[in-house]
Length: 495
Image (cartoon, rainbow, N blue to C red; front, side, top):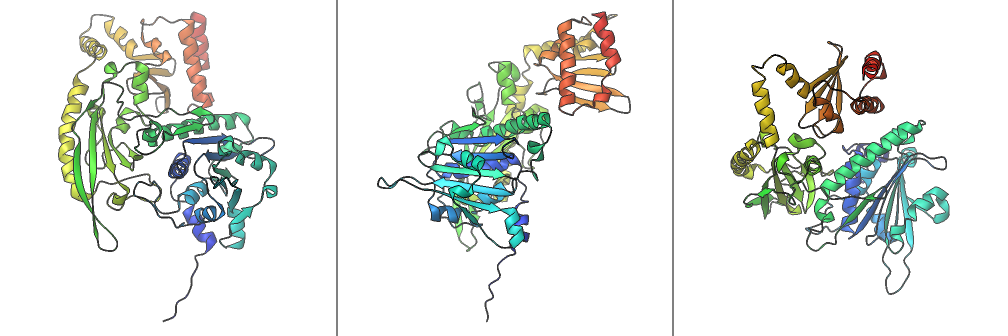
Protein backbone atom coordinates (compact mmCIF):
# COMPACT_ATOMS: atom_id res chain seq x y z
CA UNK A 1 0.00 0.00 0.00
CA UNK A 2 1.32 3.40 -0.99
CA UNK A 3 0.84 6.48 1.13
CA UNK A 4 0.31 9.66 -0.80
CA UNK A 5 0.86 12.95 0.99
CA UNK A 6 -2.00 15.24 -0.02
CA UNK A 7 -1.81 18.76 1.32
CA UNK A 8 -5.05 20.74 1.03
CA UNK A 9 -5.18 23.55 -1.48
CA UNK A 10 -4.36 26.67 0.50
CA UNK A 11 -6.52 29.10 -1.48
CA UNK A 12 -9.69 26.99 -1.51
CA UNK A 13 -9.48 25.78 2.10
CA UNK A 14 -8.60 29.17 3.54
CA UNK A 15 -11.57 30.73 1.77
CA UNK A 16 -13.82 28.07 3.32
CA UNK A 17 -12.38 28.65 6.79
CA UNK A 18 -13.03 32.38 6.46
CA UNK A 19 -16.76 31.69 6.18
CA UNK A 20 -17.51 29.90 9.44
CA UNK A 21 -20.36 32.22 10.44
CA UNK A 22 -18.57 34.75 12.65
CA UNK A 23 -19.69 38.33 12.94
CA UNK A 24 -17.34 40.97 14.32
CA UNK A 25 -18.51 40.57 17.94
CA UNK A 26 -18.15 36.78 18.03
CA UNK A 27 -14.79 36.99 16.25
CA UNK A 28 -13.44 39.42 18.86
CA UNK A 29 -14.82 37.18 21.63
CA UNK A 30 -12.86 34.23 20.22
CA UNK A 31 -9.65 36.23 20.57
CA UNK A 32 -10.57 37.25 24.11
CA UNK A 33 -10.76 33.50 24.84
CA UNK A 34 -7.10 33.22 23.85
CA UNK A 35 -6.16 36.13 26.10
CA UNK A 36 -7.93 34.50 29.05
CA UNK A 37 -6.14 31.20 28.39
CA UNK A 38 -2.87 33.20 28.45
CA UNK A 39 -3.86 34.46 31.94
CA UNK A 40 -4.33 38.07 30.88
CA UNK A 41 -5.88 40.47 33.37
CA UNK A 42 -6.24 43.38 30.94
CA UNK A 43 -7.48 43.32 27.34
CA UNK A 44 -7.75 46.37 25.09
CA UNK A 45 -9.84 46.39 21.92
CA UNK A 46 -9.34 49.44 19.71
CA UNK A 47 -11.39 50.03 16.55
CA UNK A 48 -9.75 52.54 14.24
CA UNK A 49 -11.59 53.88 11.18
CA UNK A 50 -9.69 54.89 8.07
CA UNK A 51 -7.45 57.91 8.63
CA UNK A 52 -5.18 59.98 6.43
CA UNK A 53 -2.02 58.17 7.47
CA UNK A 54 -3.32 54.59 7.61
CA UNK A 55 -6.26 52.33 6.70
CA UNK A 56 -8.94 51.00 9.05
CA UNK A 57 -7.74 48.53 11.68
CA UNK A 58 -8.83 46.62 14.77
CA UNK A 59 -6.37 45.89 17.58
CA UNK A 60 -6.78 43.32 20.38
CA UNK A 61 -3.96 43.59 22.94
CA UNK A 62 -3.45 41.79 26.26
CA UNK A 63 -0.96 41.46 29.10
CA UNK A 64 -1.03 37.66 29.07
CA UNK A 65 1.95 35.32 29.16
CA UNK A 66 2.88 36.02 25.56
CA UNK A 67 4.76 33.63 23.25
CA UNK A 68 8.30 32.98 22.08
CA UNK A 69 9.06 32.45 18.40
CA UNK A 70 8.25 28.73 18.34
CA UNK A 71 5.04 29.17 20.32
CA UNK A 72 3.87 31.96 18.03
CA UNK A 73 4.66 29.90 14.95
CA UNK A 74 2.57 27.03 16.31
CA UNK A 75 -0.27 29.37 17.33
CA UNK A 76 -0.45 30.66 13.74
CA UNK A 77 -0.79 27.14 12.37
CA UNK A 78 -4.27 26.07 11.28
CA UNK A 79 -5.12 23.24 13.67
CA UNK A 80 -2.40 24.26 16.11
CA UNK A 81 -1.20 21.52 18.41
CA UNK A 82 -1.92 22.34 22.03
CA UNK A 83 -2.65 20.30 25.10
CA UNK A 84 -5.89 21.82 26.37
CA UNK A 85 -6.60 21.57 30.08
CA UNK A 86 -10.17 20.77 31.25
CA UNK A 87 -10.88 24.43 32.07
CA UNK A 88 -9.43 25.95 28.88
CA UNK A 89 -11.65 27.96 26.57
CA UNK A 90 -9.98 26.74 23.35
CA UNK A 91 -10.88 23.58 21.53
CA UNK A 92 -9.69 23.04 17.94
CA UNK A 93 -6.61 25.23 17.46
CA UNK A 94 -8.41 27.27 14.79
CA UNK A 95 -10.03 30.19 16.61
CA UNK A 96 -7.29 32.81 16.25
CA UNK A 97 -7.05 32.27 12.50
CA UNK A 98 -10.66 31.57 11.48
CA UNK A 99 -12.14 34.31 13.68
CA UNK A 100 -9.61 36.92 12.57
CA UNK A 101 -9.65 36.14 8.86
CA UNK A 102 -13.45 36.21 8.84
CA UNK A 103 -13.08 39.96 9.40
CA UNK A 104 -9.79 40.88 7.74
CA UNK A 105 -7.52 39.89 4.87
CA UNK A 106 -4.31 40.57 6.79
CA UNK A 107 -3.78 39.09 10.25
CA UNK A 108 -0.65 40.23 12.09
CA UNK A 109 0.26 38.87 15.53
CA UNK A 110 3.05 40.31 17.67
CA UNK A 111 3.95 38.63 20.95
CA UNK A 112 6.50 38.94 23.71
CA UNK A 113 6.94 36.18 26.29
CA UNK A 114 7.76 36.64 29.96
CA UNK A 115 11.37 37.21 30.95
CA UNK A 116 13.24 34.09 32.08
CA UNK A 117 16.11 34.34 34.59
CA UNK A 118 16.35 38.06 33.96
CA UNK A 119 16.76 37.60 30.21
CA UNK A 120 14.92 40.34 28.33
CA UNK A 121 12.27 38.77 26.08
CA UNK A 122 12.20 39.56 22.37
CA UNK A 123 9.10 40.49 20.43
CA UNK A 124 8.23 38.28 17.46
CA UNK A 125 5.82 39.14 14.68
CA UNK A 126 4.11 36.88 12.10
CA UNK A 127 1.41 37.47 9.51
CA UNK A 128 -1.17 35.69 7.41
CA UNK A 129 -1.77 37.69 4.22
CA UNK A 130 -4.76 36.37 2.28
CA UNK A 131 -3.65 37.99 -0.98
CA UNK A 132 -0.21 36.40 -0.68
CA UNK A 133 -1.74 32.97 0.03
CA UNK A 134 -4.10 33.29 -2.95
CA UNK A 135 -1.25 34.35 -5.19
CA UNK A 136 1.03 31.45 -4.23
CA UNK A 137 -1.75 28.94 -3.34
CA UNK A 138 0.51 27.74 -0.53
CA UNK A 139 0.55 27.90 3.26
CA UNK A 140 3.15 30.64 3.47
CA UNK A 141 3.18 32.35 6.86
CA UNK A 142 5.19 35.57 6.84
CA UNK A 143 7.66 36.39 9.61
CA UNK A 144 8.29 40.12 9.91
CA UNK A 145 11.15 42.11 11.35
CA UNK A 146 10.55 45.54 12.87
CA UNK A 147 11.83 47.38 9.80
CA UNK A 148 9.39 45.48 7.59
CA UNK A 149 6.41 46.96 9.43
CA UNK A 150 4.94 50.24 8.27
CA UNK A 151 5.27 53.11 10.79
CA UNK A 152 1.55 53.06 11.71
CA UNK A 153 1.66 49.25 12.14
CA UNK A 154 4.70 49.59 14.37
CA UNK A 155 2.87 52.14 16.50
CA UNK A 156 -0.21 49.94 16.93
CA UNK A 157 1.65 46.79 17.98
CA UNK A 158 3.74 48.73 20.53
CA UNK A 159 0.73 48.90 22.83
CA UNK A 160 1.31 50.04 26.41
CA UNK A 161 -0.24 46.86 27.83
CA UNK A 162 2.52 44.66 26.30
CA UNK A 163 5.52 46.60 27.63
CA UNK A 164 6.51 43.68 29.85
CA UNK A 165 4.86 40.76 28.08
CA UNK A 166 1.71 39.98 26.14
CA UNK A 167 0.23 39.69 22.67
CA UNK A 168 -1.15 42.15 20.13
CA UNK A 169 -3.43 40.99 17.31
CA UNK A 170 -3.82 43.42 14.41
CA UNK A 171 -6.59 43.14 11.80
CA UNK A 172 -6.17 45.16 8.61
CA UNK A 173 -7.70 45.09 5.11
CA UNK A 174 -11.21 45.09 6.55
CA UNK A 175 -13.16 46.05 3.44
CA UNK A 176 -14.76 42.62 2.90
CA UNK A 177 -16.47 42.42 6.29
CA UNK A 178 -16.44 46.01 7.59
CA UNK A 179 -16.43 48.33 4.55
CA UNK A 180 -17.99 51.30 6.34
CA UNK A 181 -14.90 51.72 8.52
CA UNK A 182 -13.17 52.78 5.30
CA UNK A 183 -15.99 54.86 3.83
CA UNK A 184 -15.00 58.08 2.09
CA UNK A 185 -17.85 59.73 3.98
CA UNK A 186 -16.57 60.73 7.43
CA UNK A 187 -20.07 60.79 8.91
CA UNK A 188 -20.72 57.22 7.73
CA UNK A 189 -17.45 56.10 9.31
CA UNK A 190 -18.32 57.70 12.64
CA UNK A 191 -21.83 56.26 12.70
CA UNK A 192 -20.62 52.77 11.92
CA UNK A 193 -17.82 53.07 14.47
CA UNK A 194 -20.38 53.97 17.17
CA UNK A 195 -22.55 51.03 16.12
CA UNK A 196 -19.60 48.60 16.16
CA UNK A 197 -18.40 49.79 19.57
CA UNK A 198 -21.88 49.27 21.01
CA UNK A 199 -22.29 45.84 19.40
CA UNK A 200 -18.90 44.51 20.52
CA UNK A 201 -19.18 46.01 24.00
CA UNK A 202 -22.65 44.53 24.58
CA UNK A 203 -21.48 41.09 23.47
CA UNK A 204 -18.30 41.02 25.55
CA UNK A 205 -20.05 42.35 28.66
CA UNK A 206 -22.43 39.41 28.44
CA UNK A 207 -20.13 36.57 27.30
CA UNK A 208 -17.33 37.20 29.82
CA UNK A 209 -19.30 38.67 32.71
CA UNK A 210 -18.14 36.01 35.18
CA UNK A 211 -14.47 36.67 34.39
CA UNK A 212 -15.02 40.43 34.62
CA UNK A 213 -16.78 40.02 37.97
CA UNK A 214 -13.86 38.01 39.33
CA UNK A 215 -16.24 35.10 39.94
CA UNK A 216 -14.13 32.37 38.29
CA UNK A 217 -12.13 30.34 40.80
CA UNK A 218 -8.39 30.34 40.17
CA UNK A 219 -8.42 33.25 37.69
CA UNK A 220 -7.65 36.92 38.11
CA UNK A 221 -10.40 39.47 37.63
CA UNK A 222 -10.49 40.49 33.97
CA UNK A 223 -10.69 44.10 32.79
CA UNK A 224 -11.76 44.68 29.18
CA UNK A 225 -11.56 48.06 27.47
CA UNK A 226 -13.19 48.95 24.15
CA UNK A 227 -11.86 52.13 22.57
CA UNK A 228 -10.60 53.28 25.96
CA UNK A 229 -13.82 52.65 27.92
CA UNK A 230 -13.76 49.93 30.58
CA UNK A 231 -16.67 47.53 30.19
CA UNK A 232 -19.05 46.85 33.05
CA UNK A 233 -20.08 43.18 33.21
CA UNK A 234 -23.71 42.39 32.38
CA UNK A 235 -25.16 39.75 34.70
CA UNK A 236 -28.16 38.12 32.97
CA UNK A 237 -29.60 37.13 36.34
CA UNK A 238 -29.48 40.56 38.05
CA UNK A 239 -28.31 39.15 41.35
CA UNK A 240 -27.85 42.63 42.79
CA UNK A 241 -31.64 43.13 42.44
CA UNK A 242 -34.50 41.21 44.09
CA UNK A 243 -34.04 38.18 41.83
CA UNK A 244 -35.40 34.91 43.16
CA UNK A 245 -32.94 32.04 42.88
CA UNK A 246 -34.72 28.69 42.61
CA UNK A 247 -33.32 25.33 43.64
CA UNK A 248 -30.23 24.26 41.69
CA UNK A 249 -30.35 20.84 40.04
CA UNK A 250 -27.39 18.69 39.04
CA UNK A 251 -27.75 16.11 36.30
CA UNK A 252 -25.15 13.46 35.37
CA UNK A 253 -24.37 13.18 31.65
CA UNK A 254 -22.48 10.38 29.93
CA UNK A 255 -20.64 11.33 26.74
CA UNK A 256 -19.46 8.77 24.20
CA UNK A 257 -15.90 9.52 23.08
CA UNK A 258 -14.51 8.79 19.58
CA UNK A 259 -12.43 5.89 20.94
CA UNK A 260 -15.58 4.23 22.30
CA UNK A 261 -14.97 5.13 25.93
CA UNK A 262 -17.59 6.76 28.12
CA UNK A 263 -17.08 10.01 30.00
CA UNK A 264 -19.33 10.92 32.92
CA UNK A 265 -19.65 14.56 33.99
CA UNK A 266 -22.23 16.71 35.78
CA UNK A 267 -24.38 19.49 34.34
CA UNK A 268 -25.48 22.19 36.79
CA UNK A 269 -28.78 23.96 36.08
CA UNK A 270 -29.54 27.16 38.03
CA UNK A 271 -32.95 28.84 37.48
CA UNK A 272 -33.61 32.51 38.26
CA UNK A 273 -36.83 34.50 38.28
CA UNK A 274 -36.03 38.17 37.76
CA UNK A 275 -38.00 41.09 39.25
CA UNK A 276 -40.86 42.81 37.47
CA UNK A 277 -40.14 46.30 36.19
CA UNK A 278 -41.67 47.94 39.28
CA UNK A 279 -39.50 45.77 41.57
CA UNK A 280 -36.20 46.96 40.09
CA UNK A 281 -34.18 49.55 41.95
CA UNK A 282 -34.66 52.05 39.12
CA UNK A 283 -36.07 52.32 35.59
CA UNK A 284 -32.48 52.46 34.31
CA UNK A 285 -31.70 49.14 36.03
CA UNK A 286 -34.76 47.57 34.41
CA UNK A 287 -33.70 48.78 30.96
CA UNK A 288 -30.17 47.49 31.56
CA UNK A 289 -31.52 44.06 32.54
CA UNK A 290 -33.37 43.72 29.25
CA UNK A 291 -30.10 42.77 27.55
CA UNK A 292 -28.87 43.11 23.96
CA UNK A 293 -31.93 41.36 22.48
CA UNK A 294 -34.59 42.85 24.82
CA UNK A 295 -36.69 41.06 27.43
CA UNK A 296 -38.66 38.48 25.45
CA UNK A 297 -35.66 37.23 23.47
CA UNK A 298 -33.39 37.10 26.53
CA UNK A 299 -35.55 34.61 28.45
CA UNK A 300 -34.54 30.97 28.51
CA UNK A 301 -31.28 29.06 28.77
CA UNK A 302 -27.82 30.56 29.25
CA UNK A 303 -25.23 27.92 28.39
CA UNK A 304 -21.83 28.26 30.08
CA UNK A 305 -18.82 26.20 29.04
CA UNK A 306 -16.05 26.59 31.62
CA UNK A 307 -17.74 29.82 32.81
CA UNK A 308 -17.72 31.34 29.31
CA UNK A 309 -21.22 32.13 28.00
CA UNK A 310 -21.86 30.23 24.77
CA UNK A 311 -25.51 31.00 24.09
CA UNK A 312 -27.77 33.61 25.68
CA UNK A 313 -31.52 33.05 25.74
CA UNK A 314 -33.91 30.81 23.86
CA UNK A 315 -35.59 27.63 25.00
CA UNK A 316 -33.72 25.13 22.84
CA UNK A 317 -37.03 23.89 21.37
CA UNK A 318 -38.34 22.90 24.80
CA UNK A 319 -40.94 25.65 24.68
CA UNK A 320 -41.56 28.95 22.90
CA UNK A 321 -40.79 32.41 24.22
CA UNK A 322 -43.74 34.06 25.93
CA UNK A 323 -44.28 37.58 27.25
CA UNK A 324 -45.59 36.10 30.50
CA UNK A 325 -42.40 34.10 31.18
CA UNK A 326 -39.83 36.71 30.18
CA UNK A 327 -38.61 36.93 33.80
CA UNK A 328 -37.30 33.33 33.73
CA UNK A 329 -33.63 32.82 32.88
CA UNK A 330 -31.77 29.56 33.46
CA UNK A 331 -27.98 29.06 33.71
CA UNK A 332 -26.75 25.71 32.35
CA UNK A 333 -23.11 25.02 33.29
CA UNK A 334 -21.11 22.20 31.73
CA UNK A 335 -17.37 21.38 31.51
CA UNK A 336 -15.35 21.28 28.31
CA UNK A 337 -15.33 17.49 28.46
CA UNK A 338 -19.00 17.53 27.43
CA UNK A 339 -18.46 19.50 24.21
CA UNK A 340 -19.53 16.54 22.12
CA UNK A 341 -22.69 16.00 24.17
CA UNK A 342 -23.66 19.68 23.85
CA UNK A 343 -22.76 19.84 20.11
CA UNK A 344 -20.21 22.65 20.51
CA UNK A 345 -18.76 23.78 17.17
CA UNK A 346 -15.67 25.80 16.24
CA UNK A 347 -17.34 29.20 16.54
CA UNK A 348 -18.65 28.44 20.05
CA UNK A 349 -21.85 30.35 19.35
CA UNK A 350 -24.49 27.75 20.20
CA UNK A 351 -25.18 24.74 22.40
CA UNK A 352 -27.74 21.94 22.35
CA UNK A 353 -29.20 20.13 25.34
CA UNK A 354 -28.19 16.44 25.20
CA UNK A 355 -31.12 14.22 24.31
CA UNK A 356 -30.67 11.97 27.37
CA UNK A 357 -31.35 14.84 29.82
CA UNK A 358 -33.78 16.83 27.71
CA UNK A 359 -36.95 15.41 29.23
CA UNK A 360 -35.60 15.83 32.76
CA UNK A 361 -34.86 19.51 32.18
CA UNK A 362 -38.20 20.00 30.42
CA UNK A 363 -40.11 18.76 33.46
CA UNK A 364 -38.29 21.22 35.69
CA UNK A 365 -38.89 24.08 33.25
CA UNK A 366 -42.64 23.52 33.53
CA UNK A 367 -42.46 24.11 37.27
CA UNK A 368 -40.22 27.16 36.93
CA UNK A 369 -42.54 28.69 34.33
CA UNK A 370 -45.42 28.67 36.83
CA UNK A 371 -43.32 30.57 39.37
CA UNK A 372 -42.15 33.10 36.77
CA UNK A 373 -45.70 33.56 35.49
CA UNK A 374 -46.97 34.18 39.01
CA UNK A 375 -44.37 36.88 39.58
CA UNK A 376 -45.11 38.48 36.22
CA UNK A 377 -48.85 38.51 36.96
CA UNK A 378 -48.26 40.40 40.22
CA UNK A 379 -48.66 43.61 38.24
CA UNK A 380 -47.15 46.87 39.40
CA UNK A 381 -49.40 49.59 40.68
CA UNK A 382 -48.63 51.58 37.55
CA UNK A 383 -49.66 48.72 35.28
CA UNK A 384 -52.75 48.01 37.38
CA UNK A 385 -53.91 51.61 37.14
CA UNK A 386 -53.31 51.60 33.42
CA UNK A 387 -55.37 48.42 33.02
CA UNK A 388 -58.22 49.89 35.09
CA UNK A 389 -58.26 53.01 32.94
CA UNK A 390 -58.34 50.90 29.81
CA UNK A 391 -61.30 48.92 31.18
CA UNK A 392 -63.18 52.11 32.09
CA UNK A 393 -62.58 53.48 28.62
CA UNK A 394 -64.72 50.68 27.12
CA UNK A 395 -67.87 52.57 28.27
CA UNK A 396 -66.60 56.08 28.60
CA UNK A 397 -68.38 59.31 29.10
CA UNK A 398 -68.21 61.67 26.17
CA UNK A 399 -64.64 62.77 25.52
CA UNK A 400 -62.98 60.27 27.89
CA UNK A 401 -62.37 57.67 25.18
CA UNK A 402 -60.45 60.22 23.13
CA UNK A 403 -58.46 61.28 26.19
CA UNK A 404 -57.52 57.66 26.98
CA UNK A 405 -56.47 57.02 23.40
CA UNK A 406 -54.18 60.03 23.48
CA UNK A 407 -52.32 58.51 26.43
CA UNK A 408 -51.40 55.44 24.36
CA UNK A 409 -51.05 56.89 20.87
CA UNK A 410 -50.63 60.35 19.45
CA UNK A 411 -51.28 61.26 15.81
CA UNK A 412 -49.46 64.10 14.15
CA UNK A 413 -50.11 64.36 10.41
CA UNK A 414 -48.95 61.12 8.85
CA UNK A 415 -47.04 60.11 11.99
CA UNK A 416 -48.59 57.97 14.72
CA UNK A 417 -46.68 57.67 18.01
CA UNK A 418 -47.34 54.50 20.03
CA UNK A 419 -46.29 53.86 23.62
CA UNK A 420 -44.31 50.60 24.00
CA UNK A 421 -43.81 48.82 27.32
CA UNK A 422 -40.98 46.58 26.06
CA UNK A 423 -38.97 48.61 23.55
CA UNK A 424 -35.53 49.93 24.50
CA UNK A 425 -35.13 52.36 21.60
CA UNK A 426 -37.35 54.39 19.32
CA UNK A 427 -38.44 52.20 16.39
CA UNK A 428 -39.81 53.76 13.20
CA UNK A 429 -41.66 51.76 10.55
CA UNK A 430 -43.67 52.75 7.51
CA UNK A 431 -47.17 51.58 6.56
CA UNK A 432 -46.93 52.09 2.81
CA UNK A 433 -50.48 50.92 2.16
CA UNK A 434 -52.02 53.49 4.50
CA UNK A 435 -49.22 56.03 3.89
CA UNK A 436 -48.50 56.33 7.60
CA UNK A 437 -45.33 56.42 9.69
CA UNK A 438 -45.53 54.43 12.96
CA UNK A 439 -43.17 55.42 15.78
CA UNK A 440 -42.87 53.17 18.87
CA UNK A 441 -41.64 55.04 21.93
CA UNK A 442 -40.27 53.28 25.08
CA UNK A 443 -42.20 54.22 28.21
CA UNK A 444 -39.03 55.52 29.88
CA UNK A 445 -37.85 57.58 26.90
CA UNK A 446 -38.02 61.35 27.28
CA UNK A 447 -40.30 61.51 24.26
CA UNK A 448 -42.93 59.46 26.16
CA UNK A 449 -44.08 62.75 27.67
CA UNK A 450 -46.20 63.34 24.56
CA UNK A 451 -48.67 60.72 25.83
CA UNK A 452 -49.64 62.81 28.87
CA UNK A 453 -51.70 65.97 29.39
CA UNK A 454 -54.12 65.22 26.57
CA UNK A 455 -53.49 67.28 23.45
CA UNK A 456 -51.43 69.89 25.22
CA UNK A 457 -48.16 70.52 23.37
CA UNK A 458 -45.15 72.63 24.13
CA UNK A 459 -41.88 73.51 22.45
CA UNK A 460 -39.93 70.88 24.40
CA UNK A 461 -42.15 68.02 23.20
CA UNK A 462 -42.09 69.31 19.67
CA UNK A 463 -38.27 69.49 19.80
CA UNK A 464 -38.08 65.91 21.08
CA UNK A 465 -40.30 64.72 18.23
CA UNK A 466 -38.27 66.45 15.56
CA UNK A 467 -35.05 65.15 17.15
CA UNK A 468 -36.36 61.56 17.07
CA UNK A 469 -37.21 61.98 13.38
CA UNK A 470 -33.74 63.31 12.59
CA UNK A 471 -32.18 60.39 14.50
CA UNK A 472 -34.28 57.96 12.47
CA UNK A 473 -33.18 59.59 9.21
CA UNK A 474 -29.52 59.51 10.33
CA UNK A 475 -29.83 55.81 11.20
CA UNK A 476 -31.49 55.19 7.81
CA UNK A 477 -34.65 53.92 9.49
CA UNK A 478 -36.73 56.63 7.81
CA UNK A 479 -36.29 58.00 4.27
CA UNK A 480 -35.92 61.77 4.32
CA UNK A 481 -38.66 62.19 1.70
CA UNK A 482 -41.18 60.63 4.12
CA UNK A 483 -40.95 63.43 6.72
CA UNK A 484 -44.27 65.36 6.88
CA UNK A 485 -42.58 68.76 6.79
CA UNK A 486 -45.80 70.72 6.16
CA UNK A 487 -47.46 69.15 9.21
CA UNK A 488 -44.45 69.89 11.40
CA UNK A 489 -44.44 73.49 10.26
CA UNK A 490 -48.17 73.85 10.97
CA UNK A 491 -47.89 72.39 14.50
CA UNK A 492 -44.93 74.61 15.32
CA UNK A 493 -46.87 77.74 14.30
CA UNK A 494 -49.76 76.71 16.54
CA UNK A 495 -47.59 76.33 19.67
